[in-house]
Length: 223
Image (cartoon, rainbow, N blue to C red; front, top):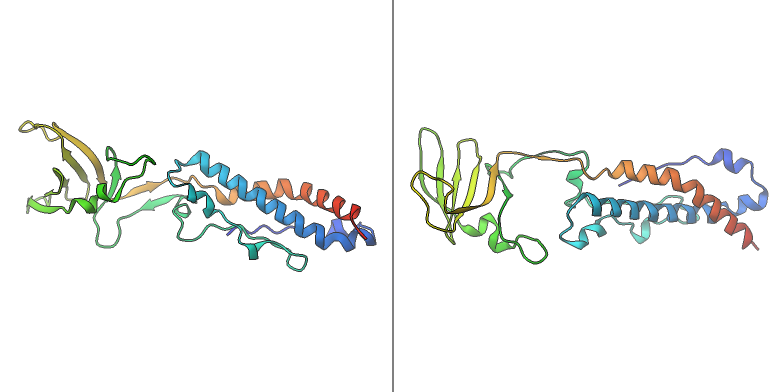
């Protein structure tokens, strides 16, 4: 949620009685116009900073109908749901495996659909890996999976998920194979969202202009 507070007491004090009576109407509309501009700026940034494979991701930056300002409620809320994939990119950080896991599978040369999305049939779980052999001394392990896939995982959790595409050569690990995923114990999440910075910048720049425009309109239409 993005919350920006503006103190207009000094500006209001210099207005006429007519102007002050129009303040609630003008203020609510200025806040809502600014909120919509912040929303659009956030979506524009996301479109440029991320590879959008699912268009609905942009709708995660939302203003609920109940979150728009009214004459008796001088605030609007632009929010991204806590469970959105976008939230982890605010501030960045480190992504670790889920409970019970040893690594995160980072896609390399895995098949995708026309929307550039990895289908369920090509995700690691679908390969149904079964341990083939391991080294007690090093904890390195090899797993065999469906569709000529196999996984090599080292003691620290790192490794590869590969698919046999041709004839291999003894001693040449990757010859005749395609690397579908690289396994990593942790993955660094970049700070790409800049949600609060963009929101504050746009709101501070645009609200005074929107307020002036809405106040002018309120005065022209006042009865």
